[in-house]
Image (cartoon, rainbow, N blue to C red; front, side, top):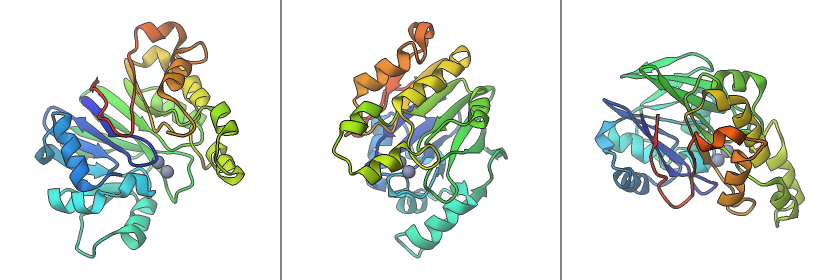
Length: 261
Ligand SMILES: [Zn+2]
Ligand SMILES: [Zn+2]
């Protein structure tokens, strides 16, 4: 699989995953037009996209879903909770859109892909991450989660590559301009976002099994790519493995270079 993060951060998220015979999108948080432009920049082809998987109903993950799903004639796949939020409250049009509900830990088969959602800890109705397998290789997409629970860690151990949230530097968040309630929300393990340090700890536990990593959903206010990268590859993270596991940083406005799985 060829994984390209088309956009990542609080202004919009989208991951393009290309397999041998088809492709998937994880989230569509930019306008459909911008996503299609970035798919092209990534060397992809829109008509290969078989579905758009949605992790949760926040705008930075669903902005383009409606138009994109109708324009490409593809289904929207999400948990029942996310789907009902999106269909009942967030849709921009009344025109029909095909949807398919998935459940935590139940694999879903789509072309050559096996898609398995797993629960994340976030302030959404029924948020999830996705493990996506083609043949015997698997990539895990895990953003918008306040923590990596032992169950999540166990599941991610089976992945060969990860797109993992590295949202904020705790020091920068502490000293930064956000109001106290927002800082609390971001730090909240049950409802917030994953810090660089928690991301690094997760990578440390998984280093043995990983071939490639892309850090994602970086805050433009409370983080910097070089700090996220240094934390992920430092002693609290990949450490000695850092030399043999390529680590990329996904950004808001640029298509990230390809991560081969
Ligand atoms: Zn988000
Ligand atoms: Zn979110």
